[in-house]
Length: 472
Ligand code: LLP
Image (cartoon, rainbow, N blue to C red):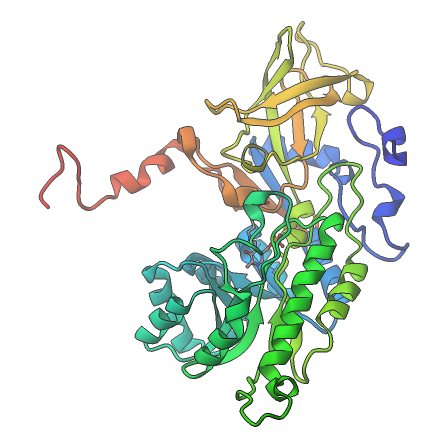
């Protein structure tokens, strides 16, 4: 058992572990769910109702700063898919990070947040025609935008649209890592040009486009135990960069070395993990940075390292607040029903992901009187279940929480990355609201959806279809 366990009370409010801070001056390496101000969260939930996401922009800025400090010579590109809120995007831009976008929609949001073309990187994954049309259009006005391409025919599709601008070649490095098989991209055929074909593909691409970089992404949520795989991937990318930018050093003077490519960067992707579990230590970012630099070295002159963290920037800057609706004791388990489910936070249902949960109290006991504060309640193993008609709709199982009662507020921690982003309207549940905290001031960043939002697309449909549809 760690020190954290020994000092933790039943509401999980022990506060930051000293190992969460690298030294007295720096910002904490992680913000645990226990570090949030419980009264403030309770006030926000009372004012804006639940389920409610709270995203702290100050923490987003701190995370950006720690990344820039650890990788001072690298281009740091925020993987927008982790959290696309405008307030977050603006904060990230102001903190000096670029934007890595996976769709036309993300490019559109990044443009709206003020990212210019030179700071926009569009990663085309099996891109729909509509996305390519849009991005090629944007590139006309913003010629410094870069398109990262992981399939030869995507290059053809770009050329067909008259695009001859900046291209980065996405490589499948043959080695993956990540918190779950569903997010290990490195070895998956879907992503990137196979490593042994990548050099030829990049050279062929250079005949039609301005090839400025090579890219690989091992996967998402890489924990300290998987850093060897990440290093192996980075090292392969360093070798490929040398082969492309300094081909004569390989060709041993046989006179027919390929033309060197004028690469600007090697993009080693994102994937920096965050500690979801209470006892998990935070990633030692400076050590990861040193190992990355060592593995990719020596980079050819003029070629920089680039990274694309998403989760690391926003995960611990967000919590999801949810209210206890029902408590059902059964012979097997105690089921605590809450108003947030897999439609608000999909990660537990989709990846069996662990999110820390803290009971902030505020509910009433069976006799209607105020329940004691969580710190005075017994830690009780519970299943926290959402309102969706699926057995998998649980936020945790068999988790010891300060015994929840009806009306209690629960804070689900480390929910700022891939939380709201993966929310849906399944079961016709309107998406939750989100509040952004900026220098302590709270503003509504995304309003709560209401029932009419569920049918907007149907009501606005221009051409009725189906059995009783109108003219075709
Ligand atoms: N770059 C590329 C090309 C990516 O595909 C991704 C994530 C990233 C960067 C950022 O990875 P990060 O630093 O956030 O780990 N929904 C999943 C995560 C899927 C990530 C997909 N790609 C989850 O909730 O864990």
